[in-house]
Image (tube, rainbow, N blue to C red; front, top):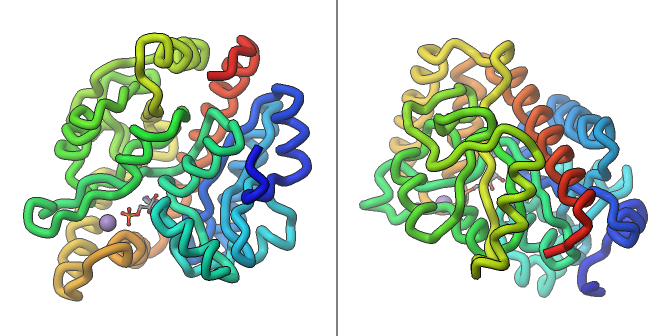
Length: 307
Ligand code: PSU
Ligand code: MN
């Protein structure tokens, strides 16, 4: 195991004993993802959901220039206040320049998790191909990381402010298997159905585990994406969400933003445009994804054949 990454005691013990572990990103729990105190509540819900299934949560972040997988309460406090976004390509910079606090995106999280041997990662929504990417070239590094690192990533799809059709096309191009979990439709984060079909469907955690285990032997060594629709009871009115997304995008356009600042800006505007009514939905889907991820990690641990 890498000594460049500090693994929390509980996570190290679980990995050593072959028990299920679920990695979590920290951007979603920072100021860039959710406002206080909802960020702490989201973390509590996700970690409880993982523990409820008998798995161990492993939050990733960078503190004092050291990447962490699994944090103490004091380290969590610093994540909640974090403002420096760390994608996979920023990890060498955050370490080399000894950043006090870096909050990891999906791409950085799956990179760190893969180094320490974690096989399952849960988030809310992944980054994707942005609308207008044919002009700006803005494609999230999350997508390339999914193809590179051998993890199961569990998400509620990607937010509809992205170009979901192109996001699915891009995943096809780079060869990432995409599974709808109990659905034939690609979910759009707040809503259960983006209107786009998923290439394949899985109806249980053991099915996902079987697909993941089948990859290496047929020559695929990257990750797979599992898209879980938000629970029906938590799904907000799609029309209201669409209106908020459109307004948020128009504001991002007017602000002339580019680069890694785009996603946090749009997320913040969606929050404002929905008067915070999007938050309960956000918490519910994150918790649900964490539970599904823990079930998949449990199914993988049960077969004991680490990839
Ligand atoms: N989508 C959300 N909430 C988030 C993010 C995406 O609904 O917090 C964060 C995740 O950390 C994701 C990152 O990995 O944004 C993608 O950023 P970018 O578009 O700059 O690649
Ligand atoms: Mn981007």
